[in-house]
Length: 456
Image (cartoon, rainbow, N blue to C red):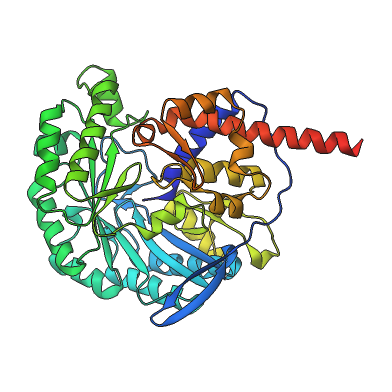
């Protein structure tokens, strides 16, 4: 999934938390640690936090705009495929040099509809990345696929280009709902695409499905999910429909032309889906993600674990230390949104970075908390120490009445492993995060005041 989606969610949660406490910042030291991972078949490699990254590439074009979508996408008319390929390759090379990463752990082609790109474009990008950094032969390379933008032959070409994992945007198996959502495929198209993807990438095929759709009932949702699980063997990403201002679906609901399920019903739908997926052998490893036979998304895990990722393409987001500039701190970077403007910038100076913001230690810690608690494993003490050596999790949360209330209610668990949500807590994580973030910010504020008093 596009990191911009995660970062928008993170920002909205942080803004709510900041509303109750003055923003605190300070100069953070560079966070650095070593991790042992396979560098390739039969090889071992040690890479520090700043020497390894995931790579996200954004293809901004779609055949049409879905009624619920407010992502950075543009209707594909007269796309200059050669120019896009050259610019994506050039920006990838520029930012890889800037980051000085030695290893790319995963590549994710998102959008937009990246399956509208030519397989030769995908191949050129992968080949270029492998020239500038170590790309293990078994590294996860994911391509998001819209069922109508690709046939069996094109899927096979993507596989030959280096893609080894497909994420299929099924969204629904109910054709009338697909029409409401503005999708340009049918359930039959989706199932055919899924079967072809499974043949090409056995054990590495994911599907996206949306719940809380207009007019959807609990009975129809459970039936639809059970039907999907007859053919889906590896990975499911489960998303609640969000009504975004400015979208066609938002206006239809506001005007009373459509109605969506209540919050209480969508909460029941979510928990029902979790139970059904569990009975079918799927392990929930994150709020929205379920895997069977360890078919987790390596790339998305990098987001949730707070690791570096480099964003390439119009509107892409990234989080990495630009060591090539002599920097020591991680930066949040956003590429220029509009494809034509972005291409001109890349052609002129090698990249289309529109905004770059150095992240303080507090900012990094806040993001790590928001993202880490989305995982069912939560945040371990060891991992938190790697992200934030200033205070332990116990120091942050001990003594807070709000946190103690969450612990008593069984929504939050804190033990020798670390801190994590319970089964029930994971379903209401967004409502818990402001209190948890306030504790982190208050701890930072108290530390800052203590240092100032010591100075005087």
